[in-house]
Length: 406
Ligand SMILES: [Zn+2]
Image 1 (tube, rainbow, N blue to C red):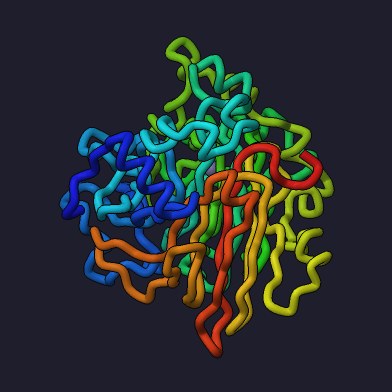
Image 2: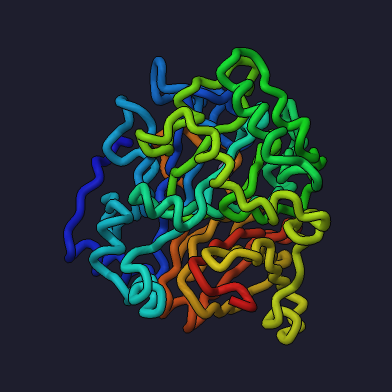
């Protein structure tokens, strides 16, 4: 990043004012030593290893992120954290921007309940599927001083010109699987090679334009599709599969978030699971996300746009896909603050130019990512598609309690 992030209250005020309550964010890249990039997140082909030797390839882009990545000893000061593009071209750390503006940015309901923006979204872009793992539920996470991590997936066609090496997700457990069967596979983790734990699960082919809801406590090995992944801001996990990316998974990932006195105790891991949700005989219908048009979009019956819920089964977060037709200009209102990523087309988003990039150099800015304050969301944001041929498509991620029914 050529400009070093700095914060001042005056700059934060000027930036929110100049954007009319909508601010632009710089792209936030995160490398991983344990994965191979799927090369679908529009970085220049020579920039996937731009973090340098031994940092791994870039296979994640974090969106509207208020947190830093927990990514080993060489993690940079701002790694994982979104940066707000300031009114005078400076970059302001998003966590300080939120702490300064508080309820006037994220809304009084969420600020009063959480005192922070408790969610973010990611593009997850791995050449291989991830190992089968589980995130702790509330109570188990709280005991570690962490918060639980429900997550959800949406497979946007715009990000998936190929599905990479393993486009099958293993989710949950087959009904009838017993604790003893699962314990046996967990014990196999330490014996070397593949513990074949996903033999106890079901694999689901990736269907573009759909997704999955994955509550905390449910086992999952996400497919190698490029995935839009709204989630709670947390990194608590237990890796249960010993084989991934054509190599062994280190033992410490099995016990990463076990209390010191429970390391080696397989019952601790078995108790992390929500057995009922994992073995739900109707798992597909319970957890699959089929997009549907929002009530507001149906009521508007505006030929210029359509908006759909794409993630809507978690109390913690939700997401919509907005499609504005070529040449159309529409005003879209929402009840709450949200992050935005443009995945196709170009035009205007409020006062900002907006465009899905074709090729991004590491460290360069883009015009594809924004955060909308609650007052601006309620007033409505004008979205203009300046193409005569291509739809303008954006994904919007929301915090707790926005989806219908929550
Ligand atoms: Zn996960």
